[in-house]
Image (tube, rainbow, N blue to C red; front, side, top):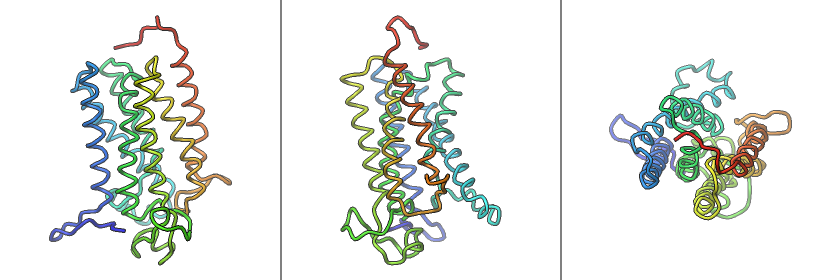
Length: 264
């Protein structure tokens, strides 16, 4: 694929970084527009989105560095080269949740109200990032396959996939992940319109559906860099408590009484 979008003199523009920025911009724009329609203060949504972006990048990078601790101890300056890839979504998710919680607590707004607002667009941003960032960068790749494109892809020789499996066709798990994000995006918007009763339901559903789908997709991944906990990959291991937490949040939100008044 194309890990480098283009060169401009001494400046190199990496596809991964452009895709990540695009995913954030699209998600923030749509969430802000939706929030305005729902009567939410657009300034709060924008400020919240800024802190979500910072928290997610820091969290995603920290978890990746932990999984590659030995390497980064020998190359410490590379810890900051996020535009080349190396972000763990679960780390980004938990970093974003923490940053969002702290900000909304500071401005005295309900966490789940704003969490439901951002959840569908988090799925869309995830899809954009996986399809145009990870796929073009040649990271987060799958196992060798004989399936034709787009189910299988041959990656650039200097990408992570190309270095691990030179010239081989690999499962396009980046695109599987992108489909996962699109499923979350469309389903959560549909659920919000037709079935939602209380704030928090979309947050719970996002955690349940994402962790379940991610757990399955991990079986098809071919990059061992993501680490393992026993027979499970690190992401599969994290998916189990995430699934349980999402289920608890959804049941709590769905069954709480209408006379329970949350904060504004």
